[in-house]
Length: 111
Image (cartoon, rainbow, N blue to C red; front, side, top):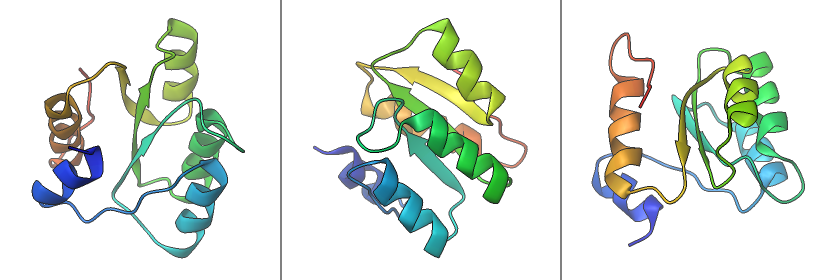
């Protein structure tokens, strides 16, 4: 089952993007409570997207999901507002759990 399907079944309204520029275009048109961001995306990397989110949507919570989980990426992601950093392979339960923690009142993610 795809992550989007799992999130919708968990009650989240979602939008998906195939690459960083598509995500940026969506963010320019719509507000979200949270974003799941990959570090490695075509056309625009996740750090650039996190910079945009921190500047233009400071209340939005960002969770980084990446196959490039290292301390450097984690530190840079946190610098630009990421509240959680999940390395691949991940379980769907990890993603849903992170979103639940992040979006709960006073939530700041953290796994």
